[in-house]
Structures are given as structure tokens and as C-alpha cells.
Length: 132
Image (cartoon, rainbow, N blue to C red; front, side, top):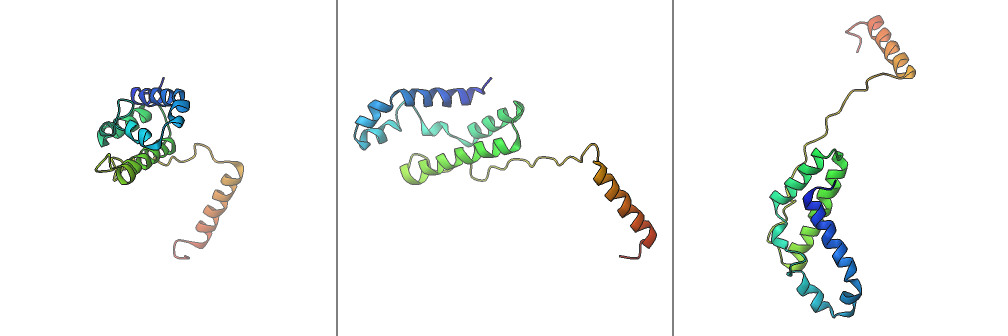
């Protein structure tokens, strides 16, 4: 099941696809006016909304790389809204840090890894601690 925020985005995108033919027939000025309509409101793209969405992704089991990609897409869109359209004053994704994923040790070493580890341990014990 998709998070509620994503459902809204998907619904808006589907509606936008349905209106493609109509939108393509209009002059660009009409398209720019739609950015402020009920289809999308830039003021709803806030840092809190982005943090909530990324948190829901994490709770749903999405990987760190998927969450980072979603953050990058949202930040790029927000940058466009700030720089090109002037509909946002600040990029809500700027400075938002995703916590790093913990590195887990392998549960079982392969035969080659075990051989290498034994060899290194034998070399270390044969040369002693001062032989570095």
C-alpha cells in the first residue's frame, strides 16, 4: 500500500496525464497559471511533509537509496519551484539529512574469506605485534 502523500501525488499525476491533450493545445501562459490551481499547491511542499513522507517510506521498508532518490527528486522539483517559478521561498529538501544505513558484518564468511583470515592471523602471530 502506498503512503497517503504518495497516493495524492500519483492521483495528481494520473489526472495530469488525462489532461495532456487539452494542456498541449493551450498556450504556455495557461500552463503556468495551472501551477497555482487546486491540482498542485506549492505551499504544501514543506520540510515537514517531506520528512513525513521519507519516514513513511522507511516504515514501509524502503531502502536508504530509494529514500535518497525520492528526496533528490523532491528537492530538484522544489529547486525548480524556487528558482524558475518563484512559487516557493526555500527548498524544503535543502539541509535534510537521511541517517546513514548501518553497515552489517557478513553473517558467514566464504571459504576464500576464511582462508585469507586464517592466513593473516597466522602471519600476524608469527611476526609478533612489533613487526608492523
